[in-house]
Length: 253
Image (cartoon, rainbow, N blue to C red; front, side):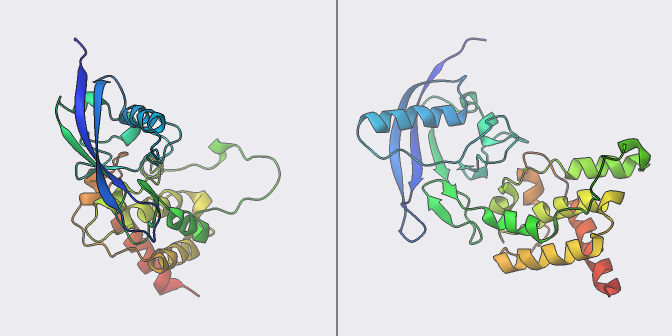
């Protein structure tokens, strides 16, 4: 298949900080290889801006392998862009056509304040994890993993939930900016395993309380979060979270 170069128009959200009003700024990028990743295209634009003495565009990135969840961009109205089950760093320019205008925004949620341009502060997720996303382990030699028999269905469901990379696409896609899919994944993958049993009740109560404190919206089960999730986390986890929360509330000492 022959490769081609693209000439594109970008509308990029520029904002100095959370306290300064932002606006879209238009840029032209030319001769962009369709083999480039989306972030590489932004690198090319930033190199051009630096050469001309302009401020480069701030955006988050780290692994560029779909693992870390840092590349949180809202592209043409979709978290992580047009490809399904895909992070922004895995999105390639062949997803676009020559002459396209691409709109690039940060996540829009009160709980994710803008730091600069396309970068937001997702520390709210960290604080939710700190509230209860851990397990108690005794010090000493590591226990053989095979010493704790676990039902395969539970193990599979736990690992599927643990795929969550905490990127925030679920929050960005939700009309209420709910973090329920993220929280349910973190609660589910520990609740399904015997290692997570000691904090099972306190975990869900504390993590839900922290989520509410951070200002995320409520879940109305539209399913937009599941559709936007790059790791295809199932909303079945939200049902499990509700069950865990009800159980913990009824049996709390």
